[in-house]
Image (cartoon, rainbow, N blue to C red; front, side, top):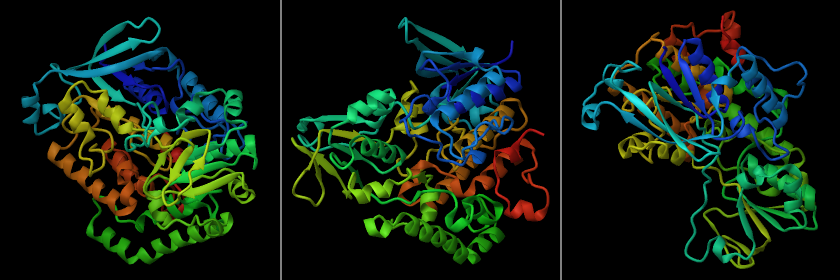
Length: 518
């Protein structure tokens, strides 16, 4: 019998982990807490579409069907695509639906012994004859709990679901002071489309946030209520949002998703020559950013609405905060069916509605929708039973998540994390990581010492702080995803250069199909 690998979550990362562990003749068992595959794509706001252009968001060995012609497919189209992938590779039989993993606990060496290890797992190997993981799983129908003993665990639980990020408020200034209703965006997304429309119809709605969910929900409220009951959007910071991926007619991928664009960036672990080149080319890096900013400012009329961000576009894309703005969003702002209000530090509740910083009168409202994101870090931490492992995986609040290659914690044996860190194409990046983990499990390569892995993590932490600013905790490799994939390729013994010819290698955008199995 082959080694058994527990995979937690049947979203995109979980399906990929299942496929690639199967390819190495391991026995995956996938635990999915819902009744369907697809992760965040199972249920979304009605108007949600793919934010990444379709060519960048596809499986390397399973392209989009020709019937999907849109560059930004709808939620239904994305979910159909994911389901087709799972069926094509016969993955569904390995998934246990409606099974929630309550906790995982390592059985093997003591914590003192593990602390003395110089290599991952003591030997640097992915498996141990003495070490196992106990995975406690609850059946959501029978409420019974079963414990599985497995050789390896891959956590594919994502960071944009389940645990909402709810702002903290002073006493009597939170939702309890408000006479209306307060929900999180995940509650709105969980409604069927007709119920969601009826839920906001005829109400004064305030949406808190300015990322993709907030923008989509505000547009839906505007569609439902028009200028009679305007939707108020409260935000902290202006962000660069994309109406399309063609600034001044130039595909954005040619500015940020090829090898030449990465020569302009100081990369983790680069040598002296590459570092010098990035410094010399820094005016061009600045120029690329200003080129995109000028287009977005003009196209969306940002200056007219006081919505020109103070940070550069490079920081936005380096933070993986780029989101596509709904069509005619600012037309709705101009007509008055969407009202934008900035509250830089905080907001609070009162009986009549929401108090915005700097304003005396409250925003009178009936319903507040908190599109304030999720606590993926807490979800990841809480799945561990051991407080020591909880502390390890959380790391320092002043640093990125301490994962080597964004997958492995040097002091947590026989475990990988996939899909927590971000990129410009999360599907492509998750697939590369799953292939890397499968090759690691298959013995293709071994990991360096714990000290070397920690040094590498520190270099990536410095990179994140340099380019993503205050958003460094998002662990985004958006502007260096080719450089990152190069490292995975070299580990696996692959040629990292995937194009034909020097010009193509340097200037053509890289995408998932460049990493298709040969």
